[in-house]
Length: 271
Image 1 (cartoon, helix red, strand yellow):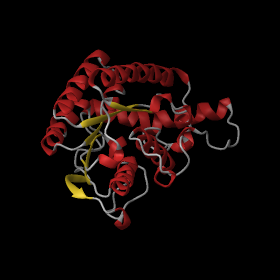
Image 2 (cartoon, rainbow, N blue to C red):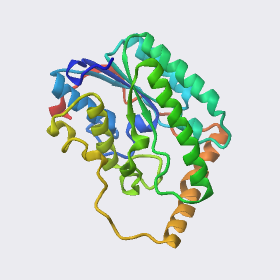
Image 3 (cartoon, rainbow, N blue to C red):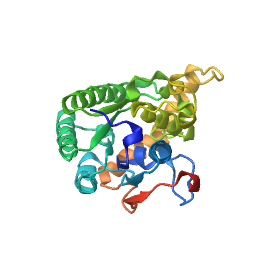
């Protein structure tokens, strides 16, 4: 059973850089806003009050989110928990996808046993990439997404099914690293989440119902040569360094603390 947004009085966001909000606009605290902060503001306006915590930290793997963040969320007993974890594991050169999904389901089961409504996410498997690397990653993420949908069905979770929204594959909604949403991307994901929570107020959604699924106005046509050059640059500047950090056991989030480690009262007008 879902909890309508107007009845949500507490919200805890768990996960990695996607939920931390990297590459969105900066908030008053000097940290990126992100879709979760945007959702918290809207839900606070919808329900009249909201206590919110965001425990997500960039670079976290599934087991780290489960060990570091899930127990805190269970202790806080929020009305709503968002859980986005696993994609960083799937990106690794060698991954046991069945093992990842098994541990993913175990974490979701723990969250649901605490009687919180749980919001899960599928991922956008391809952001305009071409070639064997992009094909391989898209296939992995497709399998991961099917697993997430199955887990959600078995445990009665909400799903923001981003993997089924073609418009989100537009590179203009993403930072040039293709791993993090740009501000327009965070706005769209926030709208998806709010509609998943039953919000219909166009002022809170930022547009008409379903606007987030509409393609952006077409830009200049790309060329095969240009796409290939862009893909090669992306692999060199972003993918290979990311893989290298993982192989060395180093993470961009090693010294990063959660943005909001404790529940606090959201005051949208002040943010």
